[in-house]
Amino acid sequence: MYNVWAEGVGTSKVTDRTIEQELADPAGAEATANQKLLQQGAALRPDVTRLSLGGSGNSDTTINSVTNITPSTQALRYPSSPNITDNTDYVLFEFYRYKPPYRARKASLQNPEGGEDLESYVNTIVNSGSVIDYNDADMYADAQRAAGYNNIIMYMPEDISTGFRAQWGGKNLTNFAAGALRAAGADGFNKINDGAKMLMDGARNIPYMLGAKVIREFVQATSGDSLSNDDVFGAISGAILNPNTELLFSGVDMRNFQLNFKLVPRDVEEAAMCNAIVGHFKKASLPDRVPEKIFGNAEGGVKKNFIGAPKLVRVSFMSGANEHQQLPKFKMCALTQVDVNYTPDGVYATYVGGQPVAMNLTLNFQETKICFADEVNANGMGGIR
Image (cartoon, rainbow, N blue to C red; front, top):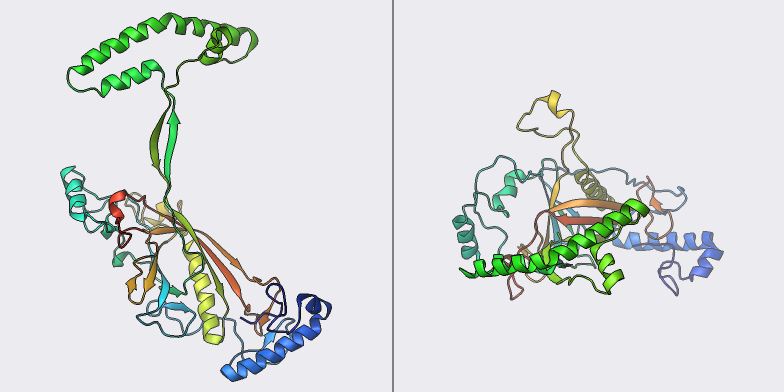
């Protein structure tokens, strides 16, 4: 990356000046940077373009459009070189049409997402009478790829991370409620005995609860103050109902993650690639003006009242031709936010023709399915990670 302004404290390798010196003499800093760029560009390859901060300068190369890119046949890559080998790690983005989870579709029990006991998992689904697997692998087969979208290959970013979050919360239960649940969970004839005991205990509390109710309603009617049973018992007796608080599981959060990339095109072809990559992600994050079908009806007069869901993205961390076995593995993801910063270094800089010298691309994703324990291998290899 060629940046006129120094990055961090010290002397810039581009201008041989400190930040203070550059701010004091920006014209001199620009001249030094341009001279160095031309020297390095000539040594690298003859078609490296001249950096222009003010729109001036002579160059016979203009970077302003995507060229020689066929969406159906060519993957978009940054950086465009060197070639990917068996030892290359990279991120692969594949685009798919969104498929509603409860649309009309055939039952399928293809491999869900991996896991250490897949056969047992499938048998569980079959024996339960379920006709459609929650993680139906056929739901996003190759036939569901989004038309007009290239695969995108990017370098490994610096912020690869993942996490799983379970939702646990405290729940207060009165003695009566706790007794009712305890009776329901008892085995055999114990249900009857526990149920009878619960009713007897509850009957003893009825007069006190009714008294508290009368006081609450009287206060509400006369003063407008709202009191709870615990307020009444606490104010009169210095006691409250036993909360019997228990920690209960209430669900899991869908994973979300963010990836950041800095795109610094080094030549005309790479600039075209960078523009196409940014355009792909912007386009994939936005809804279609006309959906495919509404309740199975493809009539245009009906569809014009609706918009279609954006595309989904499969994000894969790769090592050569295979998925990386230690890095995170995500299910199909929704692209929830795309941010592009065209002045990532704090100064406006373009090549002749208007092509930004650098762009920061920030992508936010969220998985479309929750993860289960049977999809994660205890050894940390394979499965969902």
